[in-house]
Length: 491
Image (cartoon, rainbow, N blue to C red; front, side):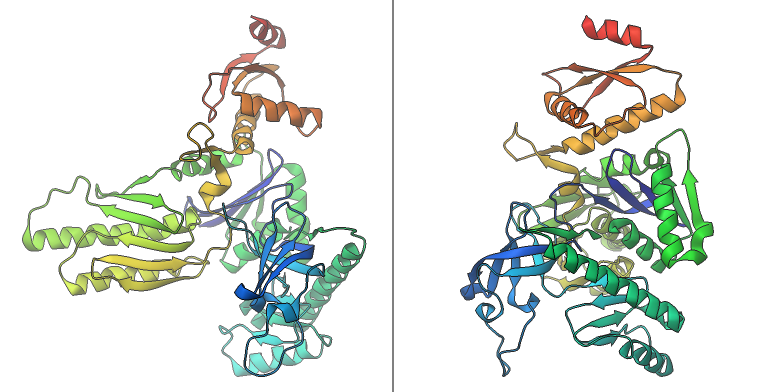
């Protein structure tokens, strides 16, 4: 069973993709200056570097974004040679750009001037004069019909890409979606005209809409939503572009927070661990460096004998590890270069079985990847497209105590966990107040948010600073009436 679970509890949108009760993918949308994939900005070119065919653009987030020449649009220079970046943009020029890769630790966000707006059946290209169809649409009659419908609808200078789902869509449905996306683009242009400086003009809702489209494309069986306001938002989005699946929508009103109920919170905690156990007794060790991620497959408690018995047992462990590796890559959103050190196998046929199974498992991942093969040292080389920051980068931050060599929960993630526990207690117990012990970093953030009236607690929360507390934790010391909580706080 495939489920999509959505919650905005704690102030930011969080979405879990589940399959047979197991977390497959975790998406978040943060508020503030964070530049997410799909967001569109009006920027100003801050620097042009012809030597590396790139420019750096101020988009108003405090970090200049990276623009490569292939991601620009403009009049071609003529001939087969690639145009110079200096022919496309100049310092001080205002440009409309879209984030194609999020900032990742020391790397700036990557942007493109080739803007695309995602729909359920098509992708609208407001700056490119081209029409293309999904390769999965193989019926020539359908391809001709779709091309005729869209070519008669697009205006000069714009284009679109027809998704696989468009093959069965009604003509008017396609036209209506194209018009809708075109109008959205016109709204963005008007917003950009009103901006005096760099800034975001569109945030991809945008996360919820994308998740719904992806869920529908992947055969979603159930859609669980926590919170009345979020439920209404999702219901309205479905009514706009997928009314036929309204019956799959469920409003979750259980006592436990949604992601606790589904086991997602526990899975996220385990996703921080280096060691990942396998049912056979073996285990994986996942480490990340600046250049690549490394996954080591270990036999663990395996104590089989030598010869053919060992070869068969090792191969079975490696095949089991392949399924876990593919899942961990998607769950942890690991991208870039990945090296996998499988347990050594002697027979070439077994090595080929492992490589074949790995490719097969990776096909289930919507993010494209490439397996390059096994080296003479028995290391499997592969790459996975890196679009957004990894799960670890999104959930944690460098630890100040060890000067960045370790990581702790991000303070807003720590607050979300506290808020979830307080909410669960408020639902399950007849309580007026809770007393919470907090580390300095979490208390400072909560007090700042309370001053800005950005937090609405379900019960009265008494806060107590514990300077010696681990920065990665909090403690609920009392649940009950206000008078007793106040007395305990004043002790």
